[in-house]
Image (cartoon, rainbow, N blue to C red; front, side, top):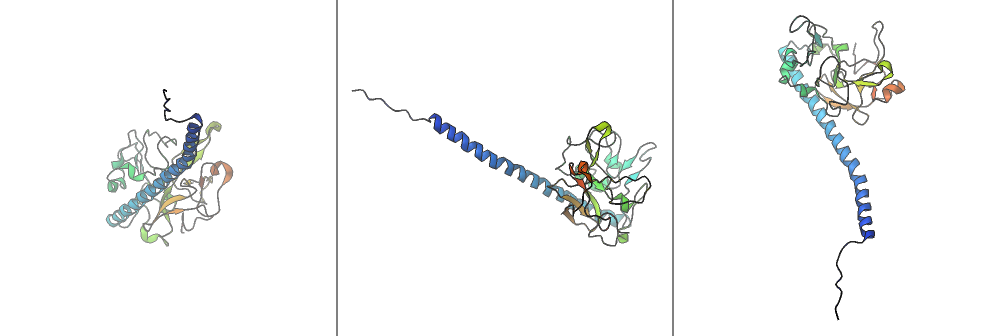
Length: 249
């Protein structure tokens, strides 16, 4: 009598079980991978800021303990404006910036990887990434000339030099998130000043910052944010007063 051989294989039920298991594992692993990526971005951002802290010390040693200019007008030639990251020309010329000369003229030294190119509208006329860190020119000065000296900062361990930053506005009712190279203070006595936070809490609700003593750390809101439109974009301030992070006078 001829016997029938049974061929091994998966039944439909078994296949469905395997697919269900894979779906469950994916739902667990994908967020974990995304979380690990964001953690890596945060770590890389802090490393970038620490490197800028090392650059800052060398710059101070060579420049009478003064901070670099925030902006220089009509430089390197008439009609051209140079910020701490380089010219507003297209392409950008980082070598025109006194600070960038100490960074090997490498703009990537001023990038936080969490806010990737293409996720925001660039400021000015540039068509390439410049920086997504804001500089504390409100306190340090540097408008057309070198800024304050380090010795003029009462508590350098708390004052922000650079911090994760961005800015929100809505021309014609269209939401736009831009990079911001200026770190807005909580309060200002300047006429016609409008309170628009630029500290960007992009790392799971925290902002990374470089302090004047070279320390790079993550900071929370410390209890304050302005308006829902800014909250939706992760913008606010660290604390409710200028002192100690934005201004110490």
